[in-house]
Length: 114
Length: 112
Image (tube, rainbow over all chains, first blue to last red):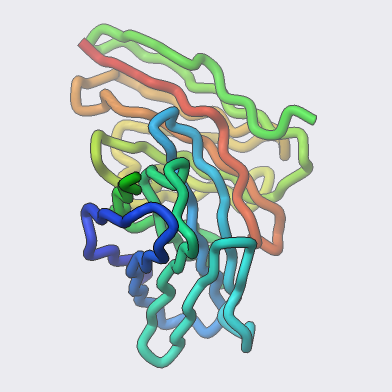
């Protein structure tokens, strides 16, 4: 069965500092994809970054990078140089090629302090 | 390019009423899904579809029906609304590569 675990309900970070949001996953499939989404207080879901299970390099998108450790089944999101606009809820998600199901973790609320 | 369109944006139902949440996408995506999000929680998968004519249950399917007669549309039906179905509902679609899922704006449903 697929499972995503985010163990940090809430995080604080000082503006301009880097922050890591934790995500672990569980699947028996060999082919899968990992995602991070941002949900601001307005409610929309914003795609941030994607990592395929066969990708050898960690994915990066601007200030976002995904620290992919396959053996540990972790896919942590690193946000560099935090901005006030980064305050939001962040969700880790996974899809497996076998099922096509995209499932989400419980989310982490990030607050950036000025 | 409208992306994923959900209607309505807000809805209040009485217990026992039925209704259909509409979801349409114009990106020719094969995969479509419905989620519910309760306060302070993640998105839980209700039903999903990997193509027209194919649907399957997610984590919380009870009380909901879906069908996928066309690639574009994936309606979610509440057969007999209950207060426990008060939630925000999201529809999402993606292509076969599933590198990115596109979300609708959500439907806020209240059952009284």
